[in-house]
Length: 471
Image (tube, rainbow, N blue to C red; front, side, top):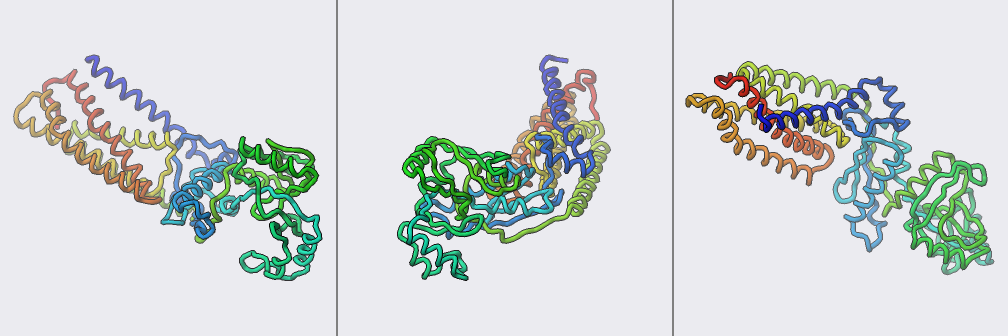
């Protein structure tokens, strides 16, 4: 065996061992009972690099969200607002520990969120839908005008209209530069109508399990610019109440004892779950505008299991038929093609596992199509080799000329299909993207197995048999 051939086989063996190493966690995970997998998933002990099952295979929930465009600021373009909303929703869900989530843009103002394995998406809905607009305002309840406005508000049966705005009679009593907001624990407060510091100035937020009142609290810290603004606000209002407002509701209103710059906390009668959700939405940032859930679907795991069985059965039958046909019709050359096809499948699963890809039914279709393209490349090579054999050329020339003459056709067919896949990936949505990703990866792998691996096998055979090869 020449040094060049030894290097080729060394590379093939290393790649094969690496692929098996990446595939093993899939076998170990999916061979466990469903109840055990769900328990480990909840504890966060799911392997990181593993092939995940999509909503159509595993079952779960699907939410279609609509961004309330009318409530966007005029300075922010719609495209940028949608991109920011998707990123914030993704950050919130990732921090909450929901794995395998698919979040995609649908049209101009809709967002599709798929939550595989989540049969009761209520907590995720609450987490996604929070606007999380955090503001710090000075309380101004200490004037007679303020007290009069609050008394009128509390005495009214319907102080707010359907859109949440104050009725005109009560609004007329509110002094200029003031704003009335609800308190979390009941009642109302009159606040400054201008928020000097907002959640946009936060750097981090975390849960403190036992606060001063015995309930969990949320501790937060500001970035450099926020520290300056918060220090200026608190320094100028020592002895006054500072309202911590979240989504237009006063969470707490402690008295400012001294100038504060870097850190603070939000206290209240939070449960641990509420405190954790609040810290997540604060840390992930505020949505550019509220989102509304306009469609909600739940797919049972039984449908997913049926889809998996049907897909696996169809794939296995087709795979076996192809292997048998190649081995019978093309003899030894067909067996070599079968080896390359199996290796193609192994490498494709390994690469998708490395990137923690989510497998869907369209993704399975992309895998099957890429395998078909792989066997097509082998057929082109073998037919070219047959032509050279009929011309009476020696074995080593048959192999070299077969690959050289088939390469242009193989390259053209694969590159054009990859271009189509790239267009689907760019302009498609949801399942179409999953199909495109698996198709492109499969085609790139097939070029390696159909050309590089099979040629290395033929070259290895030539080291022991230089006279004849069965085609």
